[in-house]
Each structure stands twice: as C-alpha cells, then as structure tokens.
Length: 187
Length: 251
Image (cartoon, rainbow over all chains, first blue to last red; front, side):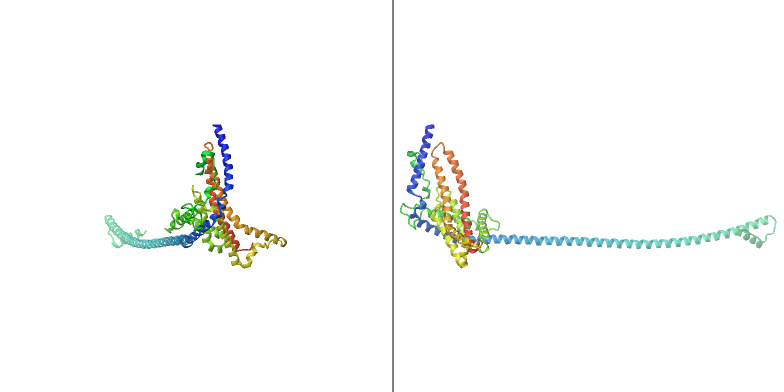
C-alpha cells in the first residue's frame, strides 16, 4: 500500500514533468495562429448578431417595460394622493355637517326652551289671573257673607232685645232699640 | 479523456491545454476562416442563451415581471447604471455597444464552465479583437468628438511644467498598453482557471488523493464562477472608463 502510494506520487511527478514538456513542445492552442482567422471571423459574426438582437429588439423592449413600470408606479402614487385628498375632503365635509347639526340642535333646543318658557309664563300668568279672580270673588262672597251675618246679627239682636224688653214689661220702642243695638254693635 | 487513454502506461498524464484546441465540428480537416468549429458552436450557444434571456424572457412585457424577465431587467439595469455612472449622461447612447460586450463575455465565460464546453473567451484571439475594437473605437471617437484637444489626455496640465513631458511619455505608453492588458486579463483569467481545474482532474486518477482532488476541483469551480462574472464586469467597466476618456479627455 505504502509502496503503491510512493510509486503513484513518483508517477505523478513524472507525469507533471512530461506534461510540462508536452506543453512546451505542442505550444498553447491560444498561440496557434492558424486558428485566428476562424475565431476572429466567428467572433465578429457573433458580436454583430448579438448587437442586432440587443439594439433592435431586446433593449428597446426592456427599456419600454421599465419606463411603463415607472409611469404605472407614478400614476398609482398620484391616484393614491388624489384619493387621499378626496378622503380628507370627505372627512372635512363630515365634520362640517356634524358641527352644523350640532349648531342646529342647539338652536332647536333653545327655541324649544323659549317656547316652553313662553307657554309656562303664559300659563302662569293665566293661572295667576284666575287665582286672583277667584280670590277676589271669594273676597266678595266673604264680604257678602260677613255683611249678611252682620245684618242677621243686628236683626237677631233687635228681635232679642225687643223680646227681652217686652218680657221685662216695657213697651218696646222699636226705634230706640234699634239705635241702642247699633250703638252696642259698634262698640 | 486523455488521462484515461494513457493512464495505464505512465500513471498520470496531464493535458490541461487540450480543452482549448480549436477543432472543426465536421470532419478532421484544416481550420479555414469559414470552417464551422467548436468556436462557432459555443458562440452560437452564447447567442442563443442571450436571445432566450433578453428576447424570449421578456416577451410578456409584464409590468409585474416573471423570473426570467426580472433577470433580464436586472442585467439591463446593471449595465445601464454602470455606463451612466462611469461615462456620464452623454455616454448613455453607447449603452447598446457596451451591453453587447458585457452579455457576450459574461455568457461565454459561464458557458465555458459547463463540463466539456469550449471557452471562447479563453482565447487571446477573441479577447484581443474585443479589446482592439474598444481601443480603436475610443481613440477614433476621442479625436472625432474633441479634435486635437483629445491629446490633452496625455498632457497633465496640473503637474509642474518640467514633469509634463515625462508624464506625457508615461501616459502614452499606458494608453497603448491598455488593449494588451485589457485582452490578456480576460483571456489569462479564463485560461488559467480552466487549466488548473484540468490539472486537479488529472490528479484524480490516483485513488489516494482523488477525494482531495475532487474537493479542489469543486473549490476552483466556485472560484471560477466568481471570476467569470468579475472578469466580464472588469472588462465592461474598463470599457466605460476608456469611453469616458474619449468623451471628457481633460483630467
């Protein structure tokens, strides 16, 4: 095994030397001038074909695709900007409407309040007037009752006095009795 | 594979560069300039994949993209932003050219990572043509747009006067080295990674170290996925930087 490897290594060294020798004698294919016209001819053909493919078809196409994409992106951004502006406007309009509604509501509330206040005042005034009227009427009837009562008291007093005087055996003078009673009542 | 064929005799044989051979697709003849080769095949696959991604993937033109469409849009946005950031607003009209370069390199690199695939961008012939095309376009564009003012690129007016000729020489050298570094960077990265993977794969013939070898291949593959994208990115952004020099040559 070891000798095998040794031999192989030896062979490798020899092979490398042979190869170097061979390269020296054969020369590099790169320097074989006989093949130059062939390579140059096919290279020129290849380069011209590639140039035609690129300049006629590929590059304009890729360039236009890239430009299209750029313009699509620009348009989309502009559209987004516009939509954003619209949304902003809508929001503003919404807020405006909300504020208007609030003001309107305030106004309606104030109006309703004023109306209710007016109604209330009206009703209060009416009630006051009614109460006053009722009170006056009551006052009047009380006065009438009081007058009636005084009258009755005077009459009853006159009658009673007359009866008492007659019972005591005196001839009652109606006029004198009435005067006396009135005098007494005043007192 | 080659290792299997010769494995019996020598134990290990490495052919890390065989994968870069340019072979005719049909038959076994010479490679003429018009011969359909594996280069043709893999460049055609690259075109097909780009077509599938950028044309078929976006056929829905959806405002909300599908997965494939968003990958296509991502690639478009990635390169477009790079061009705009590096070269400025007036560089955007060169966007299709730069997008072509980027898509070709990134897909050629990734397709080269498929096992048994041929990596077209690992050949200096391919990357040198791409780099020279960029270099010549930028230079011509610089003179057409700015006239002789384009030479101001080499005359560092903010440096002290005695230093300027020296700096101009350095600037000119670095300007002409640009296409060389531009092309060798890409081809070298792609070639080195693939060759290293192949070397590790050769070691897998030894049973004792094959697990290590496979682990190393996996790690290299992950690194190569990263490198494939980064090299495409570097090539493209350097193109943008050179283009900016042509549009605004003042320092």
